[in-house]
Image (cartoon, rainbow, N blue to C red; front, side, top):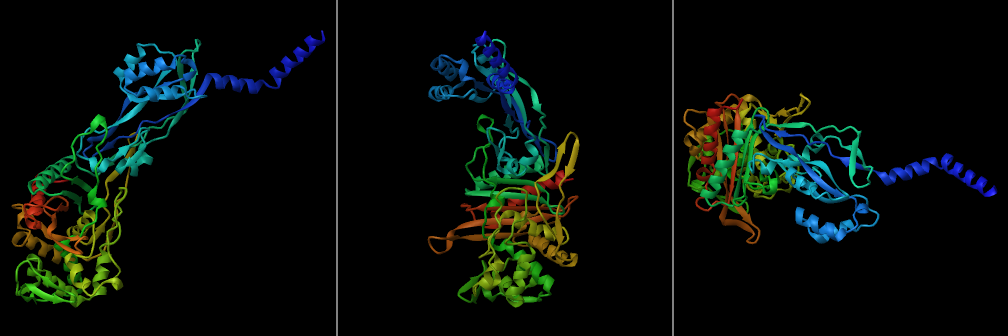
Length: 535
């Protein structure tokens, strides 16, 4: 009787006072919490073409507790899914683990084949895999996601907080036979990622990419980049990079990510940079009627400055039409080092443009007090200063849009459930219209009758500037005699909104002049744009 009383009291104690403990223990044996990723938002062009989207796939997992013959399972799963047998066996043998991944992101047909085997302890979770319909066209911009669909490169990384949405949680339980894992309804609600609308125009991107590739290959160049920008807003309409070797496709539906050199590579711009001296001289009233260009050879502190052709007396306009190094150096010499430095800073040089893309380089601009005796003469002609192509493009945008320094942008809006929120475009007025209009007319003349003639489009108002920059050779300790960068930057004023196109071709071999290599690439893209006319 006494023993029965003791047992009864023990049972009562366990049922009443230890009830929560055993309830939790039971749940731990039968339930597990698993994270479910929300569907990632799409990325679309300004034309609403889909550039990135998530497609349904399935991921395979196992509960090792219900797998007795682990070696046999590892062999079967390895044969079916192509996962190394040793890796699977190691996972299945993990002590205390009730959930291990077998393989992530298999397709529907693979899932059906595996289900036919009726393997106990094996389950499936629906997951998404990123797909990029436009092949390699936007490969240097869109970026990458990891296995869990988190952005890790490019736009996917920069706007990850909008695209990824909010995750949910589910409880996984065994069914009545304790043989199969079943997912219960969501415990926390999923919120799908927002769609991202880019400023990029699919057609202009196609033309820019196509003609850039052709030009790099024709001139046997190392690589090249193109930026096409709406000069009024800073919207990037196209941004293409080509390194001469990259493939256009993606293996296994993954993005073949390549470098966005237009944003992350710095280079000395050469004569295309003379446009800064042009605007500064007009703004300061330093516009002489004529300048003696020393017949092509001008001794400066520590060096000798040369023109590609010997010039004598040139008008102010002719200095820029003919791209005289000596003429530009003399203009800035009369202006003074400190005053010219102020204009470099006004154009935002030495600072990032603020484009919505990770890793942009700020360029290189030393404080004026650190300049050498030579710097005042050679920085105005594009040496001893580093820029990226976006910085060069927005310098020309200032002239094309009436004097406003714009911040280039790649994203136009973010949309969720038919409600869109636009991103603000940023600009700052830094010059009067009268100043930039004079500079604009001179740059139009440089295309109509100067070094930029090959950029002209018949019947259209085009302005711009060529640049042929010698590359500095660190091993030689001086500028290379045979390595160049060919540049051209300019604008189209006869479209509904002014458009800037900036081009750089690195180390072309067939010819190295900006007017021969880069200007025709500008022309090819411009011819398409004026017909299409960006809205």
